[in-house]
Length: 454
Image (cartoon, rainbow, N blue to C red; front, side, top):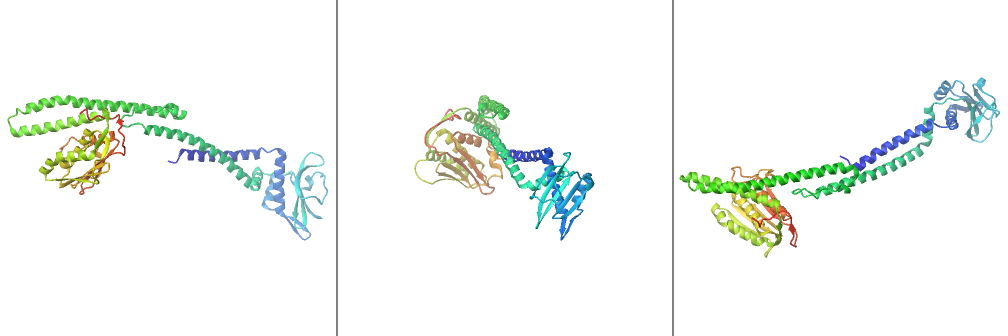
């Protein structure tokens, strides 16, 4: 869609030009009688001038199409054409007494005069034709308005076009300024809407900051933001309450499983309860992440990475997978954050790689700058699966070996730290998941989560 300002300016410019031309036509149609007679005189003079031929001592007025139309429209038409001593006359029986004698000798030009009886007018015009002066006197012409208008437009086309363009440009500039004012108001509303946190959209757009015409739109947006915020709060409250209420029954169920006499059934029940417990714990973690605040402190990413890899070393050895660390530079890598939260995020990525990277023989954790990347050489993810994995309860393991909340929690952790979780994968070429932290040095407080309360 084109811009509002351009469309507004173009539309009003065209409308202004059309109105200008209509007004011009009305002005010509409503000419004062004297003006109309003078314009008609010029038209008839032009017709007679084109119809008159002078050859030697002969002056002839040819019956041209325009002259015949003029005669048909003017039943009382008369005219006298003279050049030197040569004279040609039409309608002499209708011609009244004139104040000039024939042949007429006078200055070049045209004008309208009264007859001697003062009852009518006639047109007198003198044009230069070579060495001779062609004098024409015309009375009672009935000239169609179209001919007058056409003659006027032909003679004044440049002036009319210039005036029309100036008029249209003035209107278009005014329209563009008005449209720009409206579009600036829309831009302000859009910027204020973009500044609202999607995770907590309780911020309202002030009605005093927008034009009156946009206030209904802003009121609708504020109402929508309020409803979305209420829904998000209700959803988070339900998630936390449900997870908390499920913990006690799971603990009791696990205790009762210890009394099951069949080892195979007991092992299967323990595995199912463990999965349910993992799911409930993940739901509680997600609820804490979304409803609390964290206090960030300087932490060392290099130290956290070494500790996490040491924790997963035995599991990798049992799975027959090589676990390696690559560093771009030695020494500590300091960022602002919560130690427990970053450890949980990195452990989640490494654990996912060990469990879900089918066919992987090597997992490499790369620490470069303020980024930690976990790369495996497994089968990779299907096309388009990267975005689905970031949604709650989505898992890349079709066998059902996970709760599907791990990566969602990792994303919440990185969002709270001002960073991001990036996933890149190609079928048959493994998967890379990266924790990317912002370039910030000073410790700050963020109103989003608290992992230390875990």
